[in-house]
Length: 447
Image 1: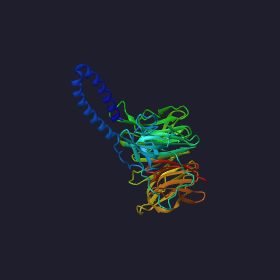
Image 2 (image 1 turned 90 degrees about the vertical axis):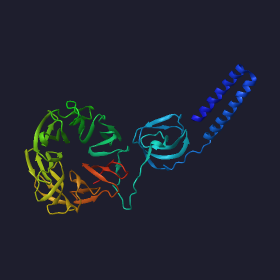
Image 3 (image 1 turned 60 degrees about the vertical axis):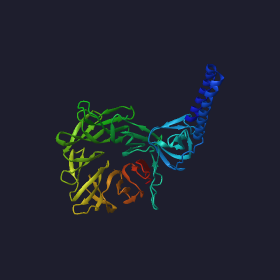
Image 4 (image 1 turned 180 degrees about the vertical axis):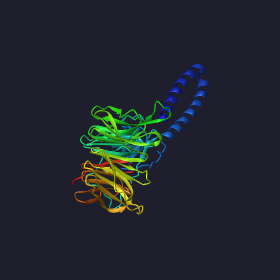
């Protein structure tokens, strides 16, 4: 394109010079000067022709049906030339499929691209398209029939939670970590935070979402304040839960109550319960090594590592009492609790090997405790319970256990990692790495 413009400019300039020289110097001098211009013009024409007929550079960066994504903002044009109308500008991280090309035009290599989030298919330059290397699932690989992939943009995602038809999670699509929501009824996605801070660890109940917000502490330059924020989905208003601490973590909401951990002087940690109806909070328990906080119904559970190994505790909001689970285990990890007071956790015997982990369920009401599942193996994580259904991750796969049927099911058998499962009623969500990305998957369990 640039060479054609230059040749036209030279042609116009030579015309004006020819007329001027003929007037100033007469025919003889003009004839000598124009012979020089003629030679120069011939050289320019030859160079222009060479550029115009040069062979387009070959490209084997992509092939038809390759999955790609953008690594910067990228324009989608109607035709593969620079001056073609722009159909849309895609954000960085947008996934797509190659459906045509390559075509060389205006010194760029163009590909026709079908973008996942737009009906405006068109041509984009290859410089900002990156191929997605999708692992091949081996024979025997499987996942639940009827599962739904909720995310498209390439990003890191974590901590999916679900209530009713709403799924929330944290992801870094726009640089900072933000909280996103997917509505299963309307099939729409909504960004809940504005990117001004790092937001993580969301928990949802009805139309309220709580999460950890990390931003610069205006009263202490160079330091960050870490607070629990509450987002009201009905009003769209977000606010700090409290303003009396700058080191809060692990929020979990149930009804009008939010349980969370607050770190104080010299690293002491306290579990608080905040009442959204009257904006008051009460102290549950304190300890140096408290973590893995979970809350449902009248029960709060957590892990205390102060003895050198994990020990699980339960707090009953009705009786205002704290109790520990049986102490015959070497480690107790990843607790979760149901509204009915069933606590599920991973544990191994004090004399057990590193692969001697089992999944247990403890009934707070009657004290009964049973091992569930058929497998002893690597440490389970991300345990979750709702009613009689229990889910967990182990070895990069998702497991489901039905207490009513006393049946364990290994839901996935895929390459890459499936993790962070969470169950609510008969709905299961998890982080899935099968497409070389941290995607959110949803599955409605058919009992």
